Image (cartoon, rainbow, N blue to C red):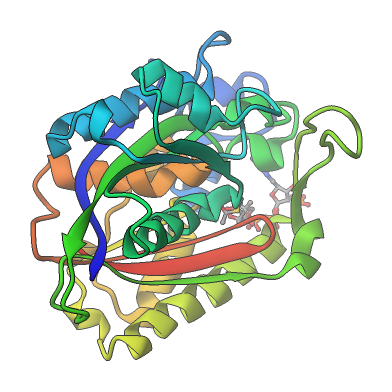
Length: 323
Ligand code: ACO
């Protein structure tokens, strides 16, 4: 038996930084309002010619380097994104081409902010089924391309970037002492589509549309549903929050993370937060946060990591990983 072990992480953030003070010049907003409501101080914004695949490729190369895996060893690439380069083909095949890989298979996964949790779950299933030995799981987003920059209620929340992990087949004894993905728990409820969506798409408006959101409703569901997913993981694995070394949640809003931490009694020292400097990069937030935690030495081999996300759909989920 095998399961997917994370062997390397990588990240990319565009050079251009837009601060809250920069946004004050074009929007009726303030640094204090944004920080108080979200914890966000700045976000990275991609250059016009910079595509989601460009960001994903750089993050992927870093992850491969850390893993010590060559491009030729890859069997699959999954790119979680809601901002693909093109409606088709998938951004993942562009990344495959950028890497110079001509074998295996590559595809995109659309679960918006939960995309990385969904993609990791699928990668783990491929590895468990013997459909691949090594794979890339990428979250890459150019959210700036679907933000309505005149809408202060959403424009302040998002940023661009990419994170990637290399997964490899690790021997499994079928116990939670194994290293790798120990469990993934996915959920969605399409009846909540109208609280967060883009007002466009190929089959409806023939364009991509811009983000529309009922912030209060999203906030309420995020705490309820991400909290329930965390409880589900702890219960299924007979754990308490004290057993978890690092809680790495989707980085939409510091208030959501703090409310979850209170509910599950995670001390602040066990939470990896990147939202202040990166804002919400949708599917990229969790792999970006994992990479930050690995590179600064917080995340170490053998530790238990709990990831948790919610986004449009609504789609949400959590996963338990032994590093
Ligand atoms: N600057 C200043 N004032 C603003 C801004 C802004 N950027 N945006 C909204 N306001 C105003 C509103 O117009 C409103 O004014 P009014 O009282 O005169 O009508 C007032 O601030 C309060 O607005 P609310 O929307 O009620 O503010 P709230 O306290 O709910 O905070 C926020 C808004 C930050 C969006 C919050 O609801 C939230 O974080 N929701 C979660 C949304 C989210 O994270 N979405 C990301 C995608 S989903 C995900 O990743 C989980």
